[in-house]
Amino acid sequence: MHKKITLPNFPDIWFEVWAEEKNGNISSNFQDALFGQEKVTEENEDQYELAETICSVMESMILSHACEGIDVSSSRYVKGIETAFDSITSNMF
Image 1: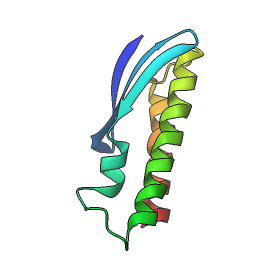
Image 2: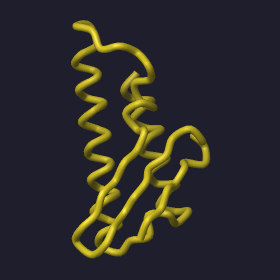
Image 3: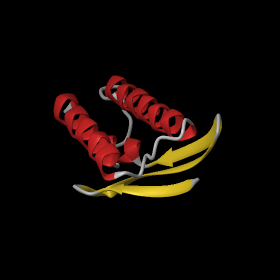
C-alpha cells in the first residue's frame, strides 16, 4: 500500500505511507507544521526537541497501524490524526 494523505482542516499538513505486512516507511511534514520555519536557538531548543519527539511518535503509530492493515486513509482515521495534531498544537504553544 502506498498512500499520501492530507489533513482536511490543515491542507498544508500531510503524511505519506508505504506499508506491507510488518514492513514499511513513512514521511510527513508534521515537524515543519508544528515548528514552522523558526530557527533552533538555545531558547527554543527544548521545544524543538519536544516537537521532534511528538512527530516521531505520531509517525510510528500511523506506520504501525498501516503495517497491521488498518486503513490510515479512512476519513475517521484521518480525522483522529487531525484531532490529535490540533490538540498537540493547542497545548504546545
